Image (cartoon, rainbow, N blue to C red):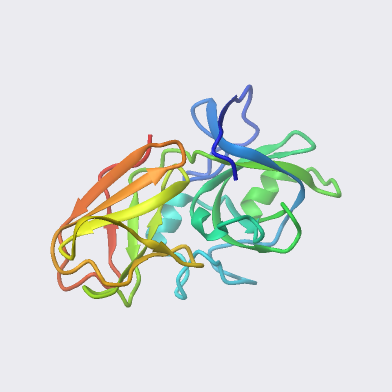
Length: 245
């Protein structure tokens, strides 16, 4: 994906916002990132939080947490697995425009579609995008998500002071890096991205205050500082103070 940034002004919305991260952007400006992905189709999938057919690649084995479902909404999408570093886009947003003139802003929760540049979508997203056409031609780009509140940090159930791993949820902007400064690291270090979208410090944060530093594709930087929770970090959902603008 390229690093170019483009601004699209929406003349009219064709769907209402779903109360979370999906629907069409509000207010009337949409920021997109990189080149368009063309030549694919949108399919029902379906993609859903309940994983009625497939496990969501960006979720833990226990599925998406209720708190994350609430803030990110149910306009969901699964990406083509051939996109470079596809797991780094877990919980990012894409903007879809169909050949029939419909559009929607969708939240990435999984990947793996084998058809180049195609996507699978949730029933809510499908209802907005579908015009009964076939093939279901569309174009999509990575995009800024709606403002749905602060960042959420969901720690894996196996996290501890010596191996610390988490998902960064609800980010408005796709991220190029996630770093931490902690008791074990006096200066910022990069966390390693895994195929399920988690970022991990293999040596652990150590018990003590730690600061997360996130960098977006547009150069924005966000930091959140936390005290080590009691009784421990395993399975914790920590809510930050802000998000990307």
